[in-house]
Length: 62
Image (tube, rainbow, N blue to C red; front, side, top):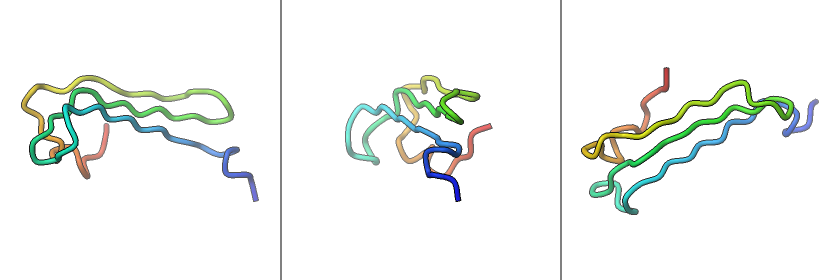
């Protein structure tokens, strides 16, 4: 069995305007994949000012 850090790891970061999901807005989001110390994939970007924090929950990235 491989060590947990020897496989693929994914980091997720979400920046919002506050802490209340019903009121806060998403500013930026990023996902980074790490395999064996290399970064084979990354995706991120900003969101429009009207995107609520609940909108992206459960949505799958392309």
